[in-house]
Image: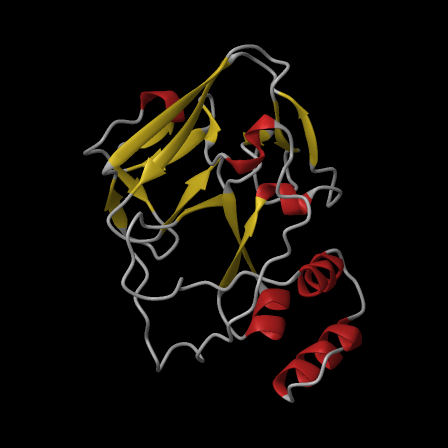
Length: 212
């Protein structure tokens, strides 16, 4: 679970995510992962298709969270587009297939430098073009599986990718910010070894209230 801690993180500035790219095919507004995705549970790695309410999964903050809800969307055939994340693109050990609207957490030094927080959330469709991530046909027919928890949770999928599932009901703003389109472009460039000075300049301008 994620709880606000004023001593651990600076207050997050309210920023908006770009609408562009949110409608990637029929799956663009759905959330979830292909049923064959491996998710780390208290009992080890399990295929998403085997997950049930009451099971516990490992989360980004190091604790175990109880699955409260499992939603399934049938893929009638492999012509329904999903987002393909090649193995290694986001610390995933194997190819990952997600609905376009599924959120992921991005973490690391560039994220901390730009946003002053441990991670940000971003929709899978917004990552199209980064490290080979693209909209593609599902490799197999089956299901898209989405999870629900009492609070916002990020779970491990295919080893190192972090899938973010916001709580159905929340009493406060999301713990992790969602970047604007411009900030996301700069971040992805920095993650691929881009200009660190440019990233630092953007952060300085942002802190001063001026656009970069």
